[in-house]
Structure formats: structure tokens, C-alpha cells
Amino acid sequence: MKIVSIHSFRGGTGKSNITASLASLVARAGNRVGVIDTDIHSPGIHVIFGLSEDKVGFALNDYLWGKCRIEEAAYDVSHALGDVPEAQSDRARIFLIPSSVRTGEIARVLREGYDVGLLNDGFRALGRALKLDYLFIDTHPGVNEETLLSIAVSDAFVLILRPDRQDFQGTAVTVELARKLDVSDMNVVINKVPAGTDWDRLRKQVEDAYKAPVVGMMPLDTEVAQLASSAVFAVVHPLHRFTLGLKPVADRIMA
Amino acid sequence: MTGHRCGRCGVNQRVILYLQDTEDGPPVQYWTFDHDLLIRIGRSFGNQVVIANPYISRTHAYLLLNEKGWCANAISEQGLLVRSERVDHIPLTPGMVIRLGKAGPFLRFGASTDSPHDVETLDPDSAIGVNLVLDRRSLAREVDKIADGDFFRTLKEKVHLLRLARSAEPPGIVDETTQVPAAQTLPGGPR
Image (cartoon, rainbow over all chains, first blue to last red; front, side):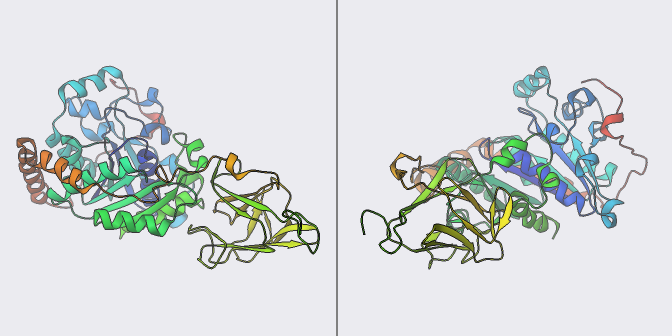
């Protein structure tokens, strides 16, 4: 199983939408994929996969408090993959491990933190139990211990940023810290690129600054914003430029 | 020639082109042309309207002025779209929006009375990131502040242990008994 952590320094970069779309592209290629929402402070990716809160029994929080095994907090959301090509349909599955949306549970995490070692054990147990080929970790924005550890135990790290100065500078801090933790396979995705931007120049600026490859660039697009959080965009709009921008990222993860 | 009228055909020659991210979105860039009979649009620098976007061809379209007015001609196979309909050639009327290819940005053909100064344009110092520059001194200060503390040393030790635990695990252990129900059939447990 390959573990891929998806992170952004700031909120609002489209991280959860990108995670959902990337994971779905990888699953539709004929893989068993898990998506784990470790953004416990502000969970949200379950909405994109159409998992309503009343359907959620155990959540990741319950595993971290020792109330259940991690696979008991997993939900098969393969319906969100749409019509999978026949050649891949036998294996293509996607499972979501949501975080609890209950404010009490969120407050407890904020108050007490959680055992990252247990989370790491959970990643591996989940991979075994669900026979996963890939596990995507949707991390909490910013730089904190839990996130840095999740990134450090991943096989691939995808860092998402918006092309604005504040994000550019903050992301650089994350890049440097990840490098000090010997994080390998660091990849940058630039989302919400405004129309009129010189894409080649922007890519070069980011690659020169971070010394890491820009593996995907997606435009700022109101269609994405309109659909955001109601479905997996790459499934609903497979030929949209947002999806086309993500495909090389998915290919790189599967390479 | 009087004002911006073509001396040959008398048609108003002034063109303002607004680049938009969406069909009815705000302009993010504009170009004005007062004395041109042909405006080339594309990704390469030989064009008058250069749009660096991977969904635009090197030479994507021409706008031509003839005796009836301005018209747009698709040069690239990516073509032009008006209200989602593909067109190869179309007369332009003020306010018309054309899309540069199926996945490209939009260009609004400006009325001759438009003032480009009234439109909202991008602040070169803001979101578009024309010149994203790292403050390396500030970066080094912030990183050192985090990396030199006890927090980060402990973190590195934890990472080391977690990696050891991961590499020590034999691959390919599969619990064949686990069945995950579809989301809609899951029995409700504690939340």
C-alpha cells in the first residue's frame, strides 16, 4: 500500500476537493483506495463523497479514543466513482474514514490532541483490512505535530498552494520542515491559478523556490467552486480543465 | 481617419478585449486596440493578445475587421465557442463573449464606448502572483525557530520510530474476513 498525504499550509486551497478527485481518479484506474480525513479540527470531505452525517456510525475519532477498530470507521463510498470502466470495475473501490462532525468530539481533539503513533498503526491496519492499494491522508492545514508526522510516514507528499504571496511564503516553511524530516517524493500542486497568469513563469518561480516539482496546475474556476463539496468534481466533469490538470498528479502517484 | 474609425470602411476600429475566467465573471486583464485591422490571439509571443494558458494554442484565433465590422476566426483546432456552441467564424457584437477552446478562458468583445479604466483589473501585487518572491531571511528565521527547538527534536525521534515500525512490518498480511458495508447500509453506531 502506498500512503499519500495531501497538505496545504492555508485553508481554502481546495485541498479536500483535490484529495477527493485525486483518490477517485486513482480508484477508477482499478485500485482499492482509502481516504482518511485527519483534518479532525474541520472535517468536510465526507460531504464530497455523499456520506451524510446520519449514516456515520464510528468515525476516526472513535478509533483514536479506542472505541473501535479503524476498519469499523470505514465506509464504502464507491458510488461516488460513477460508472467505472468495465476493465477496472472489479477492483475499483473507494473507502472513506471520516472525522466526526460532532463539536464535542472536535473540542476533545483540540483539548487533548491524539496519539499519532496510534494513527500510524491505523494506517497500516486499514491497508491490511481493506486490502488497499493506496491510502490518501487529507491533513489539517498549517504546521503541527500530527500533520508533520503524517507527512513523514507517507510514501508521497502532495503540497497544494494558491498562487498568492502569503501562501507562497508559508508553504515554503512547510517544504523546509518536511525536508528536515527527510520527506521523500515531495510534489507541488498549484490550484486556483487566475486567468491571465503566465503558467510557465509561475511554475518556474515555484519550482525554483521550493526545489520540488510542480506536478499539477489548475485554474481558478467558478464551476469548480459551484460544485465544490456536493460531488467528486473529477467524476462529474472528467474532461474539465480542473480534472485534466489533476490527471498528471494521479498518474505520478500511480507510477 | 476620424477618432478610431477605419478610413477605409468607416467602421469603429477601437476594440477592447477583456479576459474572463468565466463567461460572466469579472475581467482579469484587458487589451485595447485603436488602429489594428487584425488582432492575433494565442499562447506564443508573436500574437498581440498573448495568453499563457495550456488550453490555448500557440496561434488560436484571429479577429479581423472588414466592411461590416469585427469578426472572429478560429485558427486552432481547439476552436472558439459561443454559448457552448463551437464556431469557426462569427461576427462580433459588443458584449459578446467567446471561449477560447472547450476548456480555455473567455474573451469579452468590448463595446467601443467602454472605458478600460472602469473595469476591475488585477492588482499586480496581489493574487495573480506575477512576481512571487520568497523572503528568504524571514523563511530561515521561521524554520530555524521551529527546527532548533525541543519540539522538533522530539518530532524527529518520533518519525524515526514510526518509520522503523513501518519498515519492520511484513508486507502482504491480509485480513480476509473484513467486510465493509456500503455507506447507505451501515448500521448506526456511537458517534
